[in-house]
Image (cartoon, rainbow over all chains, first blue to last red; front, side, top):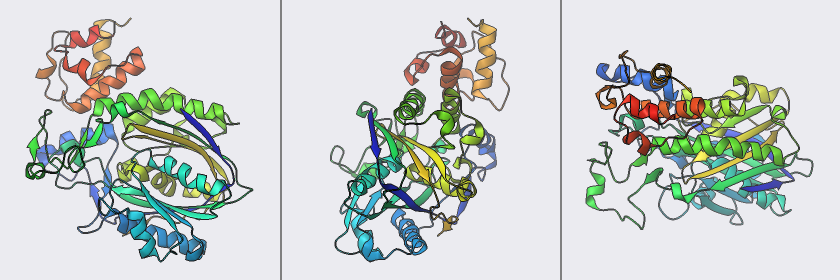
Length: 350
Length: 74
């Protein structure tokens, strides 16, 4: 358990860009409808945003970044760091952050690199970028977070209805009056097979058969480049690790659970989040969800929830949020942050 | 400790089958048309919340009947 505190870092703004194309999980062949209704009821995902052909994560991220920079009235030359948290890079190499440094017209003096994390990525990204600012170094930085995980051609009926696409941009600035941020982070690589794409790296170089849909041990036909989810392992990990890590985070801070205005959990599965909510004894109103409208948007799910569910609440005054992301890796990261007068526009569609 | 019929009631609620099926201690899980990965997740949550027990995908694979599942609560 890695507990840490960051001082002097303020969230100046947050934008979310998602595809305009809305896909309903109930839009399917009539014989599949009953099965889908049960899936929607239990997993909680009714609609998802899916990229048009040819649009990738970094396209959404670019739009989110431009809107953020313009809304804050920041000079591009003042932005000293651009961190991209994604598992859907433009290319295996080089890092997407560097490509976006160029597309955004940021200076050559920009720190730019990618972080390869999914579900836990938002809080980890805040910690990484925030650490650069906190130590009186960088003054302004932007974090782009999200994935294009939708897989419209999948034959995995469960998987088909889970993932949505989104990119978010978060602006951090050095500010000595900012409320401290508190973090609790963890990793467990023994669970690396719980969420995995096997082919395409060094362990399993791509072979022609990886591009064909072949049945796996579970009978589901998928390509070697498709993600495999071990539902029971992910569920057990989430309900076992997340409640105590949130409790430990709160205990390490000056606050109590009641002092947190909203708990924004990674949006993967309503069953998981409801179980975590009940274990922590949290009121439903304090645990907003975006899952029903956007599906699982990977590392973007926390900021997507903030944009889509908390905009009004945040406009009415400063709020203390506990963010908690958990999943692929296995990896988890929670943080307590305050948002006060941050630039937070409506959802942008591409 | 729950009786088998109390357990079956919780099981039915957890798996949320669309088509109601009469479930007894001897019912074979494989014979239930909606005994799928979604039902498995529901049962895992049920074991955690109602019985404070962690059951894994492997536990479920090794259960043939409702009674086998019930035994895991003991």
